Length: 401
Ligand code: NDP
Ligand code: MG
Image (cartoon, rainbow, N blue to C red; front, side, top):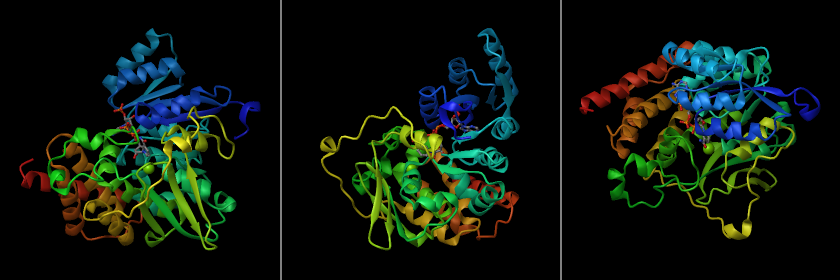
């Protein structure tokens, strides 16, 4: 399947094609037509952008959330002379994620909505390029069990986790464990509010929160980066991907976003992966793994960067990081609750209904109100997710939002 230019091109499904990761993935794919062909693309609200992507990449399938949009897109595709078939909803997403012809699935839908299609790809034994960290955070144990059972190859797209993956012992990818690894050092830029005076944080706007200093990303993950919930979700993600305990993962603020994370070995060696902050590097790494391909990213200019800084995170400034670490330690239903409460709170913040500092208050209240329970199947995960959404909704109505 990884034979490169001599074998047939790999068939790739891109879930969340209209988003930031989806577009970067298609940019890398388009650089290597001899290696990769687009099998399916999905969009949600940006249907005209999806049409343009279909015209460019001529996929076999396109997926949209409902039948009205599907009919319109199908007509437009036909008018453009394309034979792309339009599928609808979660069923359509699961179908293109698990189709026998597909080699690899880029899971780049944002949030809990990506869980079922990503799991469908896992269960079908596909190579999974995992950007949708919320899916793994919600269902970690079940997700990893499904990966082991199907023999699916799971490759992290999150820049930090892709960096850690690259710094792991060579045999790690063959399932031989993290031999000799002492700690994982998960780097974080600190986002746009790293140095904002605490008093000003009460009044920051969604636009300020989304103005990330180093990365250009979708709006939800941009707010998560500002609150450092993103790093909290990544801590949980790292524990599952690299079989680590929460205490083995240390968060390090590194404002330049040049070192994407590090692995500390028991002999004192610390391995790091560096690169310009451009998601096409981890995407190309995962697409071609274990080979290497051109990603279109400019070479790193260390002289222009000149210095690399590090500092410990301040949990008073970033309470979401503390809440995520607590959820990581509690395990079971706690990460799914944390994730769902965060999704509701961030959506309300982006809508102008809650203030930035209230995001953490909502999540903390939800976690305090609902006891942690075991999650033995997917239904239990979605029950925890739904309960957290109800409780977060109650917070909103109690506060008149
Ligand atoms: P975007 O918001 O840019 O894109 C999200 C994609 O998901 C879009 O294609 C969107 O469709 C689709 N989508 C949104 N809601 C739904 C839904 N309910 N059902 C089906 N599809 C939906 O996000 P990003 O690309 O930034 O992030 C995607 C994932 O990758 C997230 O989990 C994020 O945490 C992760 N990630 C992103 C990084 C980045 O640099 N951007 C870095 C590391 C991880 P539409 O746009 O048509 O509405
Ligand atoms: Mg990341």
